[in-house]
Image (cartoon, rainbow, N blue to C red; front, top):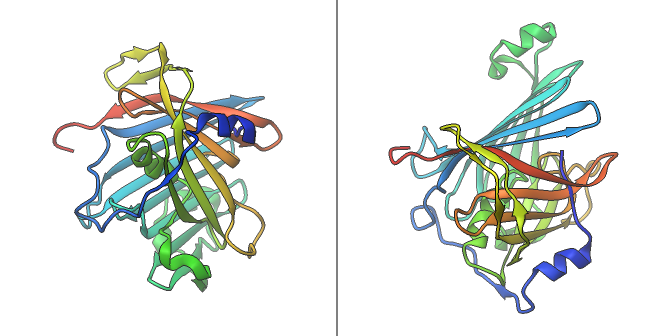
Length: 288
């Protein structure tokens, strides 16, 4: 459920002079949680509807970290991803992905150390699909455990995930046109280099609902963050980079007034260029 744009469009959105910003400092000196707490995206294509719900909060386990949860579903398949990250840089600390398909279920967990990450895969062996969906994934049988080493240039780049590019892009656009940053993106066994660059955006027709039922339906001025994605060395597995179902180079348009990510553009499988729009938002309360 996503879209991407051609290079000429990306370039026309960017300021001509680019400034490379250094990586932010450690947790505790970085930005506060954004004004939004929950974002929901939904896209209909052909006969199917794809939905994604994203939530960003302080980690209940360690208040110096943030927790990001993503729940996505298409007919017959669903996944829930939970991550702990450093607020200042977006650096991943831990990640878990529980997925249920038409035939099987699995839990993949990742722990990020300085030089490598530990990847584990668990499966609900001997359980029916309905039983697996109602059981504790941490109790499933261990199917594999692998140590994955980072690309050689990892020391100067933060390791993050596709979902967290939304958070990193949100921080970057607050710096304004010309701001740029590079990160390493880890999927399952592959690593990608992502270059994010902020530029002037385009008018975007907003159409989303707030938690109190208010609907926002007007044209908003935006800042655009272009995300160029390329493999960081040779891919270990087949190309698996995507964000909300979109692959290739991406564009995210943020409302200039409230920093909400109104639209994501990229390439959708079997469809081509696609735009996915924000459908609903829950803003953060003063106590959350």
